[in-house]
Image (tube, rainbow, N blue to C red; front, side, top):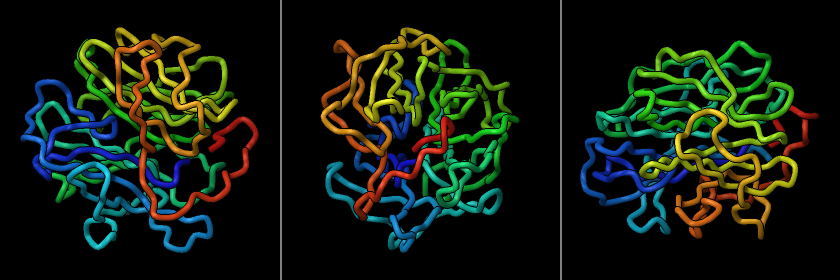
Length: 285
């Protein structure tokens, strides 16, 4: 799992979406851009300073960040594992927000976790309607959710990492983030993948993910965004370094589908420690 996660632009700061971490459907009610925000959790290699609640930080330029709430969490789960990882914020078609997060506190990668934490918000200053939604009944994890509006289906797609003998990306569809469709495989290229991020740009859907065989980030694109519609051998994204973080590349129509601008899915104030050990084929982080 990444240490912390995801930069995004928030409506609470009178801003429209600017990156894959806050996904804004076209036509959504959005105020003019004025600032960026980042959703993250904190974790250090020795556990000191670890806080598995939702943190927010703000920036005017996307480079210099100021933690909000004195770098204390703005919300903390009260059910499940009582902690979160991988927070994701989606701006819905009505201009309100939904927060999704992995139901996991700490680094027990072998834990079966079938749920996601969910909150609603109108402005990202107050969070209501806390609940957990069950995504599947499998003996596996539900990690690193990302979501987007699927205009063809008229529903939201929730994509996440799971394992069905190999690490793959699953998807469930929903209209209200309370009930979801049955899970189905979204992307399984024949090797282990983790930490998908989906960005819709016009009529093209971009998928970025980590290849567990080589540790690199990759990008693929689809004309529909439907399950199993992405090529199995897309172009590499940022091959000069291996990454412990989720890919957050800017979408582009250039060959390969991966933009020149890259950032980690999140920011941390500490130096990342060693990668957690692999647990056979399941959930290598």
